[in-house]
Image (spheres, rainbow, N blue to C red):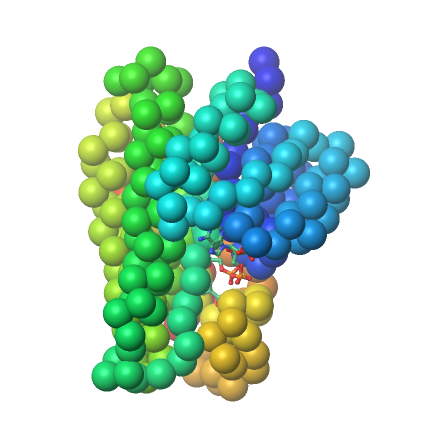
Length: 249
Ligand code: NAP
């Protein structure tokens, strides 16, 4: 039988790229989604292929429904099946207080971090659910410790988007539990990736490291390990779980 196929959104760098590397090492075939970072996505795919894995890059903006539908069709055409989805793509917003937010900013965060993952889940369920003739599968949503901390003074809209991801995970897990699909989430804490530079503070992890009970930021590979566990049969009785990967924060 062909190796299983996982689609990882936002896998051109950071946690998504680390998840792609670990998935390939664990014999998954990997669909690497990216939005703008073609060079990053191509470098990840080249690395996976050098390691002997089957991988392909797919450009799609997960804040757009048409792109999402096209992404799932393209992955199904290229690999012939889809067994797992990692809803990893996400954006923060410039650090600031809520009274200064524009509607456009909030809409962008919610489109990328909530609408996109919900529609990706829809496309995955349509293909994986035994109700639709599929063979089941696994979905892992990448939430954030922000969903329970709230991100006051930084990006409450982002934190709220991750609260929605937690609730999506709980609800969808129950909706499709009897149809062969497990749905879980990881909630990373402060992880060393470029997302912090995107919101205007490249040194954010170092500044806040002392507030982490383990006194350090985490690495993308440490989050990837939790994601791969939730994708694997080793977590076969877990669904609707929200797994904190936050050094105790
Ligand atoms: P990152 O280094 O900024 O990478 C983000 C990835 O998402 C990139 O590959 C980017 O691709 C992609 N992306 C963003 N918007 C997209 C869209 N609309 N469509 C498709 N791809 C899109 O971020 P990261 O730290 O690895 O974050 C990954 C996930 O972990 C996010 O959901 C984030 O909220 C979550 N998280 C991160 C931390 C942390 O401390 N790093 C903590 C908690 C949760 P392009 O460049 O091509 O757009």
